Amino acid sequence: MKATDKSYLEQPTLFQTIGAIMVAAFMWGSGNVLSRSLLIEGVNEIFLVTLRVALIGSLLFLNYFLFIRTKFQMRILKEASLTGFFSVFSVSWFFIYALQFISSGLVTLLISSAPVFTALWLKVLLKEEKISKYRYLAIVVGFIGIFYLFATGETGLLNEGNILLGGTLAFCGVQGIALATVLNRKYAPKYKVATWLTYQYPLVIVLSIFAYIIFGIAPEQLSTSQIIRVAALVISNLSAFTAFTWLIRRVSALQVASVDYLVPIVGVTAGVVFLDESFNSNVIVASVFIFLSLLINTREEFSN
Picture 1 (cartoon, rainbow, N blue to C red):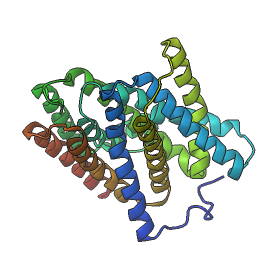
Picture 2: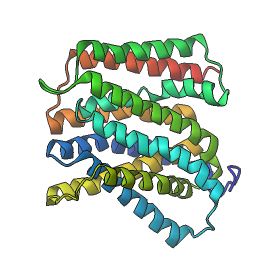
Picture 3: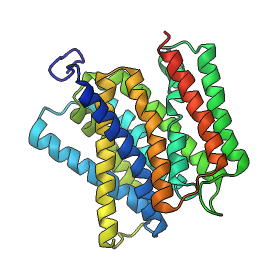
């Protein structure tokens, strides 16, 4: 189905737009906190990723076969699988391991730098954009903030963690988000949100189960509290993906960029409140550089 089909690309109301922005920001910001809370209690990271992916995929497949019921199309699967590899599989694995070495607040802070790198990948892969001096400045400023965290050794955790390892893993995850955004811009407008998300998951589930078997991870007995948090994690991830994809297809990039500003605020606050993560001068300085980078990038995008 093409992007010009106005039956599902109608202009949203202000209330709908603000609601989707808040849902995406809150769900993404809280998701890392939920994941880290489970890791702290000893839940295996491979088991957690595989369980989360399988549950989200199952819900999407159930919705697709019960309510959408369109003919299977290999073309959509090819386009969506590549996107899903970056947006779900690689991001999930990089971030779940990063959360063992740095705080959930720092992970969400690094995630907020993704739009800056998206501009770079758009130029490299799609040749769509010229990288102006302001975009280069945004990239440099963003890197300064990231390198500052590396240089200070700040992990956001109290006397533990490893910023070099955790930060590198999170940075790789950010590149996965940026690459997925490029692919979403190219392919997502052609399809309904539920269809596009559903087709991303077959490859992701296969790869996750394969990793689960290869590493020989045994099923875990979760407590009631952990089951509730896993369910909340599934809901938060699915809600965030749905809201963000909905926004990409219907509103301006400036409005979508609002999500990037709100996610670290939610993530850092939740990490401090619920996980006793630290929030000190190092985190504040890095935040200033990364937010300034986002601001420069956003300003340049809307001056064109």
